[in-house]
Image (cartoon, one colour):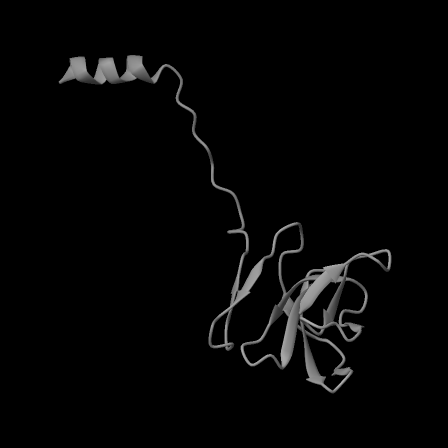
Length: 122
């Protein structure tokens, strides 16, 4: 099982055998959260403290796990929400992003009078 804990003083990603725990292993380096397993269970994805989607390969042993150095995939929105999802085939990600830019907002006051005026003109 993969989970996030702040027992080290900051949020980090860990894995642990389940249902019988056989030790825990830290996956993230420098902070992380929102862990997601790849469909085949060989990789674990997470968001680093600086908003990068990371991937680490895991090779489970009898009582241990060999973890590769996490590698950066791409930037994602960092914050209090999980900002990505892995497709069921494990080949694509769905990433939550902002649309960028802003659209003007128009506020119409006394619009009922405007409607009455237009109706009277017809």
